[in-house]
Length: 440
Image 1: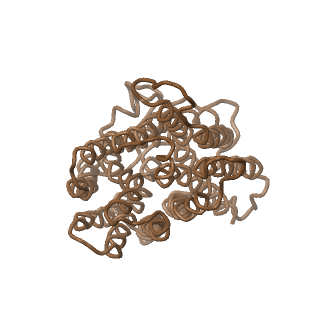
Image 2: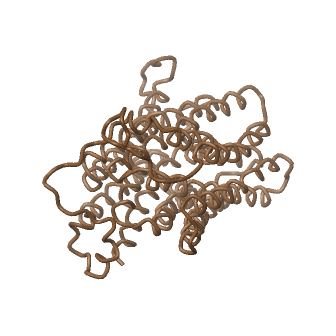
């Protein structure tokens, strides 16, 4: 059916975004031959991406609420694809340092900042597309399919990047530069597909009568007036909003550590070469894709069996969070196979969790403000990644092992689940209005 094809289209964009953000972690060892990067500088580069990613998560949400999903996502994807390609031009070029950074690091940081600006609108756009095309009982499954794109991109990244690093060098450019040029090109190709294929259901020429009847609850009738934008202050005055943001701050602190530091952990803790790490490094990301589908499917299954939204979402969230503390065992393990298995459990649980958290905005506020709340939630998650990533870089450069880092990471989802249970006693629509002071 057409709406599931739309879910696949959006999932492909999310896959490209995760491929793009994995380029630096997996190409870092090759980049260091031209541009020296310490652990703290690596954390700085990760934070540069996350800072603008989080801010644009909010800004992108507001942009999408104004431009609409089709035009907004087009602008976002073009921008981030060009930003990804711009990494290829980083280098010292005989120039002096800037703000205490070598010029090569400064250029990489600038590219990461730009990439974050572009990619920050990806999930708000995905959330809007789900709200436009799927009724409530199907949204968690649809978001699971879309969120599975994170796994596809991350699974493809290790072997693809390693292949490019070991089999290119065309036109005299270092292979790591081709990593960024090729991945940036994928996004531009996707933009053409998106522009040709996406319309909201009330405008899509391919929507049949049967599917239109199924989507009657989400299709908006044409109107001569534009609905008033709900002010940000009106959304922020509810403790439920802050609970979702804080939960995302905690859980994504752990997630971005796994995402950005797993390649370095495998290379250093087990003295693996790049090809070997690339052959096994995709496995946890594959598990994360299964988690995306399982979390959303469990919640939708509970809803179909008559469970209220509050119970369906929280049971699935609790089950996801329960898988995360196992990473605390990793420092005691000496088998890379068992370590990959434990990380796979964590990745499965994280992306099951993430799918459900990103559905919460659709349960709590009307469609015209979904992009804004999704942006606030993403901003909280990115800031969690910045704070925890800086801590990891400092600990590693000051002689600490990964043990304290893994102990903290393993506890963050449990804390986040407690925040949701306490801060959102009942998941339901919030009484929002266009006035920041007088909600109805």
